[in-house]
Amino acid sequence: MDHKINIKSYSFNELQGALKEMGEPAYRAGQVHRWLFNERAENFDSMTNLGSKLRNMLSDRFFIPSCSIKKVQREPATEDRQKTSKFLVSLHDGEYIESVHIPAPKRDTVCISSQVGCPLRCTFCATGYMGFTRNLNAAEIVEQVFLVNDHLACQSPATHLTNIVFMGMGEPLLNLSNVLEAIETLSQQDYRFSFSQRRITISTVGLIPQIDSLSHSNLKTKLAISLHSAEQEKRSRLIPVAKEHTLTNLQNALERYVAQTNEPVTLVYMLIEGINDSVRDAKNLARFSRSFLCKINLIDYNTIVNMGFKPVKAERLDGFIRVLVDAGLHVTVRKSYGESINAACGQLAIAEKIPGPDRANQ
Ligand code: SF4
Image (cartoon, rainbow, N blue to C red; front, side, top):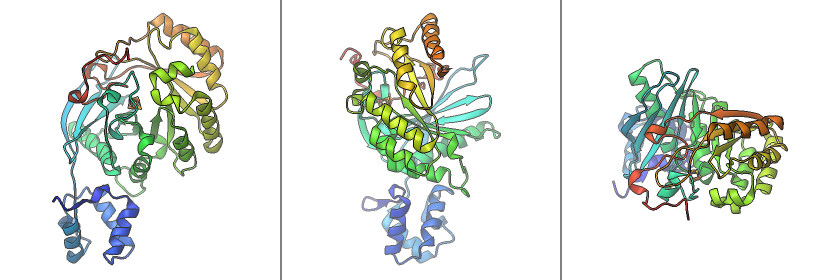
């Protein structure tokens, strides 16, 4: 298999090109893509609407990789909360990623990864501590949805995923072409999921050129920005890449995004005690948010071993919300999910890949 190419690493256009080189008509790419991404064929022999000559040519040149669930951790249910589950998914090259199922009364959301690790090293995030190994290809992104959905359906046949959020491991806008290709596949009309793109959210720390690209794509997905501070210096400490993608430029990019798409942006703000939770921080956030259509989603900081950050106390949260509401902003507070199984925001990481020392002080 060493000399063979992973066929699922090809984009649709690359697949079209390869089949054209083999002398095949243009419609073949659609047939092969459907076998790979909708039927999840495990070998070329099962692609029964292709001639045997083509099947042989494909298997001489390509292999079909597989991903599988290696471990499932389930949070204990409480009276007011259904169980969150975290999935450890193994990739064909021995790497691992994590995906999370977040159930709610009217929706079943899967939080998926876009990279193995992450190069951006945000100081509050366990994934950043892992470092970066590689981007996921579109197939590996799509496969997480299949694997989680099918696992849930085995346990309870009525369950099916309704929403997808790119908030797992990695910065999706650093892997934009594969993320977009995966979204096209997941929302393809006559494929199994046919997800409405409106039920798919891409979350980013705010990479400006990519936000501009996204606003000019034809996708109807939602955009969430992990803001966490509206003060430049403080934000750069939490999110080092914010030094290059400054708040002023980010604000301008979000104004352009909203003008282009006519869609609000969600600003995700993780409250960390003593770091970004003061009245002044709230006023900065209000100032940043008022020039474009947005919703503010406040979330708890989820404890990560050795990081030295803490979640805010209730009174502090109330004061913070009051400033935003008084400024006329739309604010929601998202309850943390999955913390007990390290499945909450910022907690996803393959344990063996995290170095020990406390980076919060670096
Ligand atoms: S918060 Fe997102 S961008 Fe930052 S290190 Fe974690 S995964 Fe990467």
